[in-house]
Image 1 (spheres, rainbow, N blue to C red):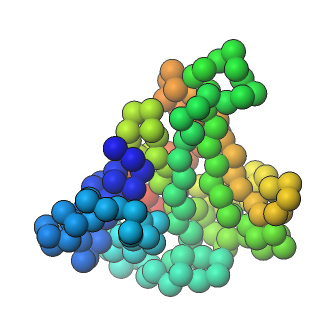
Image 2: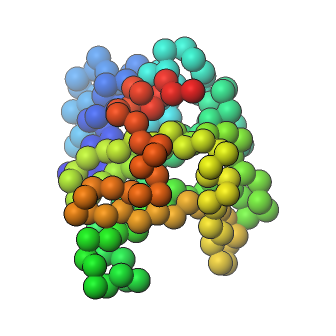
Length: 175
């Protein structure tokens, strides 16, 4: 199972208004997840799961009318090269949190991270007051990202664990 398939099954089929009641569409989507813009469908599903707390607006520095941003990310399968002695450490990143010109997303980040080691999704509500000071710029493009390390032996992302929430519904309704 890959990231897109898991997001389809756990998020989009459960929350997206077009998918949650259409079994034919669900079957079609599972047969070829790559033809769908899964990240956008997750954003739309999040707005639906918010129970009206905000709308999906797809603005230039925010996805939702409350100023928050939806991001998806993945933990890498291969062990970190910087810690070759510890094959339990894997890197990941939340990309495009700021532009090459330095313009940051407007508010908190609602992030869904795919964990390929346990084939699960993890959910994080990351306030801007924290992430704005933890942006790493790509050396050639200048685009900002939040880098993190995942420890497979204890299933943690130490840098983000204080922002972890229970499930997608909680992530969607967090303020």
